Length: 387
Image (cartoon, rainbow, N blue to C red; front, top):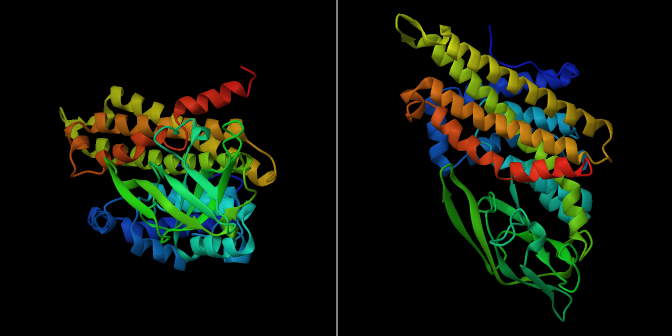
């Protein structure tokens, strides 16, 4: 019996065909270890530009972006299907999440020229990045100090240091969050800016991680921006940021759901074939029960992720902060635990680079940190009950 988890029952025929096409693409382009190794070597991280360009040609990178800018006009469920299937199929499209999150911010708050550049660029295969975190402003992002000062000609002068910025080294456009007024509370006086990556004064330094090159320090030194670089309303970026958090957390949840499912598939395949004491190790009750628990947890995560996605599609103007945080918490914790369990059940082979399991672990272990730590998600959920 297949270990591939079920699709949501509410999917349309078009969505089911989309999933089939995604799975065929993943098998064809990333189905062997040799293919995956070659793609991983291309950029030294989880994003292969050549394959990403092919996804753009197929029209899939605009799955949930507006038709006005070349997108498919789909919803959150469509985006979650894309993320789940590309992650499960080990498709190295690591630039997609930051690109679609950033593009959605432009869609909501950007002007026409900004949307054409950023949203249209994302659909065409350009990578976008959002620069929020700083050395002293991680979970407490409102404490950021990167400053943008108004200049006499009506423009802006930016100085500051951003860190842990995903895909900045690949990005064509960076959505910068800077402090433009320090007279109020820390959540006041923040502004979003549209910054082309080649703007003079920007320096990007890679931060090497166990997952390869994914994140960067980004330094802004005397960076000059025009007056029309503001995205949305100057000094009012905090509510703009909050408007996008539900989507970000749901996208990250869908991504890790796919990885957790792949971990289960790989583990089951291994324990069916590996023999010790004269029979497959998967036949031992200790492993069967662990796999049963793991499969149940993954199924719970799947139901939660797609239920939240369906709710977002049904009421697009409503916030689902509690539910999105629950989905992010459940899916990322499940993916991390699944990879640890998979490595344990595979024994030494789970630790060896000959197999994908150690790569799964490197991808999963950080998911409970980025996009808001598990502790932050629990705090959001708790506060939603008045605690």
